[in-house]
Image (cartoon, rainbow, N blue to C red):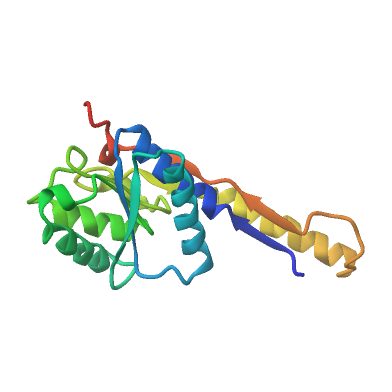
Amino acid sequence: DQPSVSIDHRRGGWLAAEHLLMTGRRRLAFVTDTLELHQVAERFQGAMAAVAEHPDATLEVVTCPARSVAGGEEAAAQLLRRPAAGRPDGVFCVNDLVALGLCAGLRDSVSVPREMAVVGYDDIEFARLGAVPLTTISSPQEKLGVAVAELLLAEIASGGDPDEQRPRQLELEPRLVVRASTSSVSE
């Protein structure tokens, strides 16, 4: 019932998983601490939709203790306890901090991206600065701010009249930012 501006997180999850699939990855994992948050659940559902389009692909959830670098390191430790053949070859992390921690935790044992491609979410400033620059999903932050301001100004101008015809819910598209953490299997 209230005006809102959001990001299409389902599309973001689809973009991340589809990119991994297009680079030849088939055993995918989604690393997160919860599926209870709406935006996290949407990311996972988008990834599941992409995987559903590829009958030879799978998607599992790998649970980490927090959406942090330490959480990503713990997820890496979990994956490293598995035999190499039982590990995913493509990982989509709930955010860039988890992805950076995962890459750090894998550094001495698994080649990113040759053995395991990694995608983050948020395109934080440090994503491009890792030992392996991180492929990520970027949200249009500037457009988000402008849309919120415009929506707020429209609400003020209308006096909050719910019958006035104007867009009240806007959903903005994220975009894929490809970096070295997901180069093709054949490369």
